[in-house]
Image 1 (cartoon, rainbow over the protein chains, first blue to last red):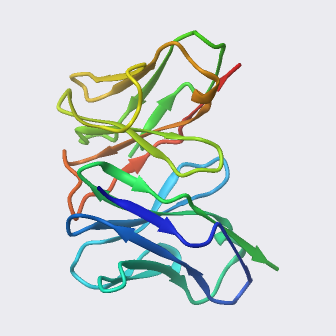
Image 2 (cartoon, chains in turn orange, blue; image 1 turned 180 degrees about the vertical axis):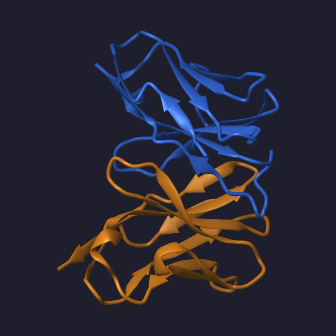
Length: 111
Length: 116
C-alpha cells in the first residue's frame, strides 16, 4: 500500500520569499514521486518527478524537490515566490495502486 | 499537439440517473486513467486501462465502470447516481501501462458532475 501526507493544508508567504511545501510518503516499493499543481479551473500540471537519477529534482517555474529516503520526505521548495504561484499543490506517489494523491496544500501569496 | 480532452465540461444529473463521461488521450498514449476529485480533496484513483483492458481499480463501488476503445479513447460510466458522486472527474493519459519510476500522467481539464 502507498500513501502520502501533506503536512500543511494552507501555506501563506509573501511575494519574493521562499516557499516550502512539505510531503511525507509511504510506499512498499521504491517510490515514484511527483508534485502536481492545480490552478483554479485548470487541469493538473506536472511540476516535477523523482526518477532516482538524483535526489534533488528540478522542475518547472523554479520549483525543486529533494528526495530523502531516510526521512521518507519529498518537500517542494522555491527560492522566491511569485503571485502566479498561488494554487493548489499535490504531492503524489505512484505504484501498483495507481497514483495516490495527498490532500493538497493551498499556497497563498501575499503581495 | 492536443492534450487530453474530456467531454462534457459540465453535467447536471439527478439521483438515480446514470452518466457517461468521455476522454481522448494524447496521441500515441495507450494508457488512460480516471480519477474523482471531490471539492477540497486530492484526486482519487478509479480505474486504469491499457490496450482496452482494465489494469487497475481503486476503491470504488461497482456502480462505476469504464472501457477503452481501439483508438484508446475511454468512457467512464456511473450508474444509480448518488449525491456523493458530485465531483470533478479527471482523465489522464500516459505512454506506458504501469506506474513506473519514469512514468508521468497528463491530465485533462475534467468534467464537473453535479448530482441533485
